[in-house]
Image 1 (cartoon, helix red, strand yellow):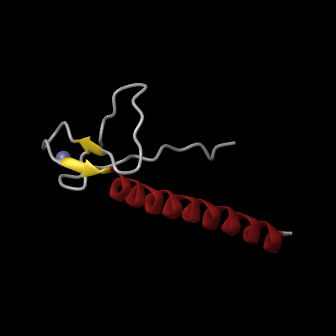
Image 2 (cartoon, protein in one colour):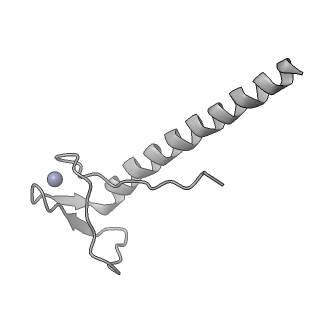
Length: 76
Ligand SMILES: [Zn+2]
């Protein structure tokens, strides 16, 4: 399996990846402070953006697999 990928959670203000302390847990409604610009990122908004990013990645991965499958079909 090579489908392992990491979703980077970016600061909504400066686009720098947000660093969470280890074992820190965030919940809906929490604010995540950006180490780079010091802004407070709304957890829910950050997750929404990360989800969309994840969906895009999965989509392009699926498209890549489909292309391979199609090639194999036609090269038989
Ligand atoms: Zn920032």
